[in-house]
Length: 479
Image (cartoon, rainbow, N blue to C red):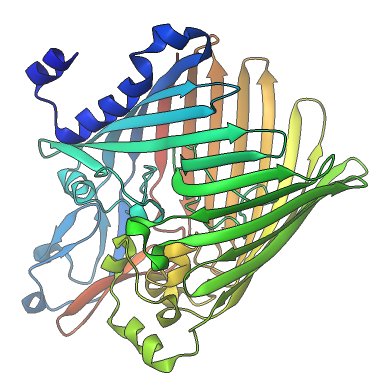
């Protein structure tokens, strides 16, 4: 094994991933009955249309070029006319290796490692990903954040020419011990909370953005978690999230309780961050033939009234959205409520319809504030990713046949009348082989370039209008 590694001359980050897997893979003969190894190979082909940009009259003498996430637009093409960010083709691939050792007396070990080779026909976008800036307009790649990880591998494993990049993610690495009193999990694991179906106000630890293609596994974070059964249906769940370098400003603690009372699944949670705390809860139940859910959370940023720290926001740029270590949260935001309420109904055994209303107190009804919102604490460390205040989310799932399912959903921003629509179909070809076809459609006012003296940038005229038309196909094989 070592001779093979030396001959391949693999990078240090890859060697670390192989070493971690080898710790349980190599001695599998000694406990073969308790060892499991699985994973998947996925490949997405994604085509995205161009993004139109409405530009104001700009003095060419003020600019050399304007660079966006996707492309650089030269100054000779932006005088009093609508411009566009060129469309592009992407090949997104993923290899996930999952190993676990199960023992009733010694506890369990879980390790998941994923490599994502990406190709972009637009070299400017590939360069942007190479820098670790993964929140691009229309970006569909799920990636890990160091913010809630004590130590981590570099997200970018290597670049491949000018059009490719290889990402990596040590997504699970934990030890689990179970006894009659409860379950203890130490290490990198997934934390997800909430009762709502689409947007969870209490789920603040790295939720998926709505346009992410591969949403099969939530991003793992580093935590110590203990869950105890205190009744037939009651659970107490508590934990400590250990962020980057163990710093207080990147860490959190939570206490959660869940119980089922007369058909009502009730949940309450408290989360403490460095300079903020969250109190929330939710309920799920049936009302006749309808399913019903409600979830709400109040977020208090304890220094939000400190005027001196609030003034720091004026010097904050969009680049901060990719910074892992953040300044005091009070410098960024005010307190707010978030809530979701919804219902689902089965029209028949094959068709289910759903609708959810979401209120986002961290957002704004003023589209001019959208760009600045991305730099604020709720968006950088509290899991908020929608910019408006009021949303209506209808959805439908249809089991077309035992092997084919179709789903559709729409996020409608009531404040700016923009819409993000997704339609997808999954086909099962065998127990191990699946394919997907999907479409992302958006409607709304597009990007707007503006200039004031030498200060040139863009603003969002609506939340979803700048999302490109996207068509994708995928093939997944599980082993």
